[in-house]
Length: 225
Image (cartoon, rainbow, N blue to C red; front, side, top):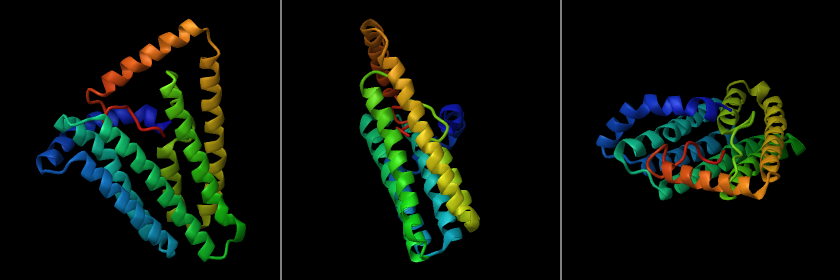
């Protein structure tokens, strides 16, 4: 939801910052890699019960993820390779974030609740897959009430207020599953239209892909989130 509504505006405002970062010799791939390292630090801090430190690392992981597209566009280095790396890095980071939370819950004797962040991770992977598969077929599965930005915000709140961590994980799980249903219904509806209309949509998707490969947010408006 936030990705679709605000990402374009954020990208536009970050262009000057991206240009300055690129002139320092830092590339978009460097920033993506730093984000993964910060995600690992988040997982370790949270796993050892240092939730506020984990929140700091979570923020430090989010910043490169926001800036890498601006750097790629400012340098004219946006590419399919960069988009692929960024999308895979997002999935790895998500696994580390929720793996760290599972580690924390196991260490504090939460019993079966340790599976809650695992369930959130599985649901988030499902909605990412739905979008990727839909786009490969020429359909649009973007949007939904609980995308990656919303999950990161709620996780941050849970790390800030420990008493809210488990309730927010339940909320994340429910809303992420609802998003999965939203996307499924959206693509099902599109796929149920006549073949001629579907072919037109595939051509439109290919044109959009070519436009994105020209340099918009590392060749796509947002990763598969």
